[in-house]
Amino acid sequence: MRAIAMTTGLLAAVLILAPEPARAADKYNVDPAHTAVVFKIEHGGFSWTYGRFNDVSGTFTIDAKSPESSQVAVIIKTDSLDTGNPQREGHLKSPDFFNAKQFPSITFKSTSVSKAEKGLTVVGDLTLHGVTKPVTLHLVGGKVGEFPKGVQRTGYSTELSIKRSEFGMDKMIPAAGDEVVIMISFEGTRP
Amino acid sequence: MPDPILMLEALAAALFASALVVAAGRLAGRRWAGVVQAAALALGAYLGLAVLGVTPRWPLREDQDRFLGLVLPAVLLVEAVGGWARIPGRAKLAIRLVASLAVAPVLLYGSSYLTDLGGPGTADWPPAQRYAILGGLGLTLFGVWSGLAWTSRRSASALRAPLALATAIGGASLAVMLSGYASGGMNGVPLAGAVAGASIAAALLKGDDRDALPGVGAVALFSLLLVGYAFGELRPDVATALFLAPMLAAAPEAPPLARSRPWMRTAFALALVGLAAALAVGLTIHRFQAKAAETRPNDGGPTADDYGQFR
Image (cartoon, rainbow over all chains, first blue to last red; front, side):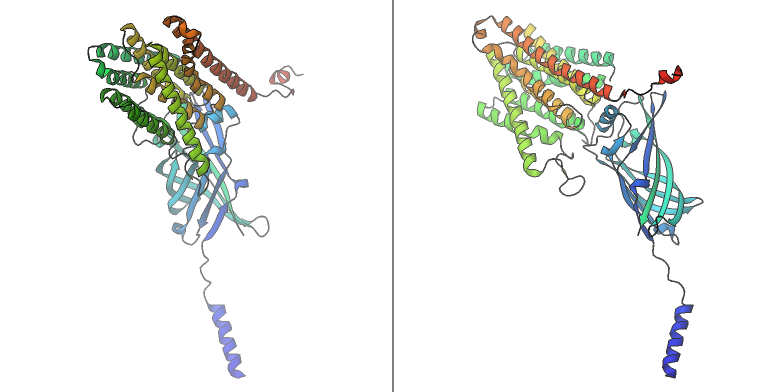
């Protein structure tokens, strides 16, 4: 009886004193309802034309203890382009610009992640128009919370500027500018 | 819309370059006619394209690259060698058939029509449908190519079939430009110029058009319309009408027109082709304007002017 009590006590002590196991990295699925990929491009130097992509999916893994283990992978469907003008969208989906039938996806896959002052610095490969080039995303955010109840959520936002000609999209310059500013805001959820 | 002045410059460059090569080629013998015409079309087309700032790019990632870097050189080579090497008629037909069947797969290579770009089974055309469509397209091209070659021989006119093709290519160029694929359509301008230039020079110098012009013209027209439909928003009815329009050049060979003078038959044929091309382009313009109007809906609600007038 004493032996059992001692064993139980020791086991309890071990369980109490044992260090908390390191939590595994959290894997999130991109929440399309709270994700936006918006871009703007100069129209002949007069103003900026805005557009967005309505079909964005992906996953990302955030490891708070070891940020370099974090990963981000996003897929954007080119055909989901939306500028509020069907005629312009048709033109933008043609080989003059995105060539949606030849290159139906825009993808980003991280190659390295590091902690930054306001979030994360993510270096990765952006594949646009069939051309892959490294880009750096300065993700701001990272608040983790439960919303709605039972659903773990986090989110980030970033902005980057690319030259479309570097991705082989070199037609109609300067009528449509070479520089494209892309604004990305995304949330991810996990059960 | 591309710069119209630049397009006219490209058209003129292509037209004169191909005409000059055909004129110079008259010094060579009849055996070299096919080579001369292919060279005329090559120089005219690529010079005109260079004026537009279009050059073949490597690797051949997109439809325009594959057309300029693979399809056009291949058909020029087939037509040049076919005339020069004195290949027997049946062998020529077999080569033409193979070439016809290869054009569509090359232009659509790697696209979502033929490739599972979004994972297994995601291609727009499932395998069975894919081969039927590609086969049908290839056989249609072969039919038009052969029909135009026959018309050229039958008409004894250096102008009729090539000018019919140049007219259709010009119309297709405009239609594709108005269908959301400006640069693809623009490529048709120097092609039309090169075919027309070679044909006019051949006619003026009492030359021959039974070699490279109909074949290269038919493949150029087919390619232009296919990429306009597949990668732009060219409607299939317009594409079909423009592709079959040059076949109207054969109409005057039927009785009773067959007994009229050659120049009358040629004029009638070109008028028919021009009318068909104009109707197809007109329909495209109408659709373009209708779509543009859709993007400016007027739902009967207050306008900016109403607010400005404090109504």
